Length: 155
Image 1 (cartoon, one colour):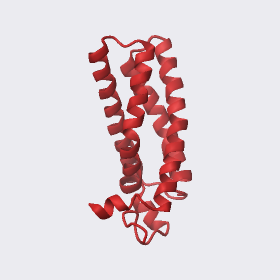
Image 2 (tube, one colour; image 1 turned 120 degrees about the vertical axis):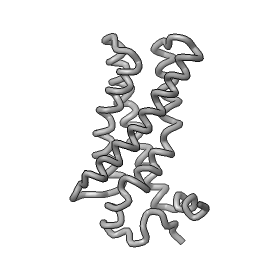
Image 3 (cartoon, one colour; image 1 turned 45 degrees about the vertical axis):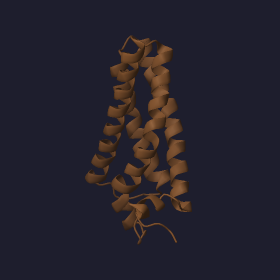
Image 4 (tube, helix red, strand yellow; image 1 turned 90 degrees about the horizontal axis):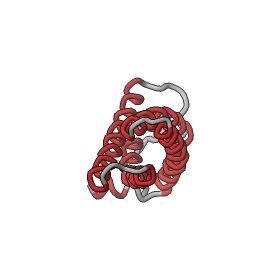
């Protein structure tokens, strides 16, 4: 376990984490725009979150695969399915955070829904990075020349 945790403490992982964060900021802005658009047209926060997450998950996959992890070439069904699984778990966590906020504050105003949405985005960042690096893109990174594997820390 200690070796795994140390694998996050090297220059490559830090650079990847910053890129995942940048993609996350872009996607969060896009997701907020979509979320608020959907709320403005009368959708419930549940469906607004679901559709905003669905659209931005595709954008996130493309940006993280190509820019964050520098992968071109073959996209496998397993990689894509794992990416959507990681994001499905993140979506579930986001929905749960908004549900708890709704229980605590009563029916959420737009401002309260947005505050809960920000909290959720922060909570899910590190688990999503670990999921992308260690589950989704692990095989592709190894095939692209990372002989040590993404789980091995740099000396």
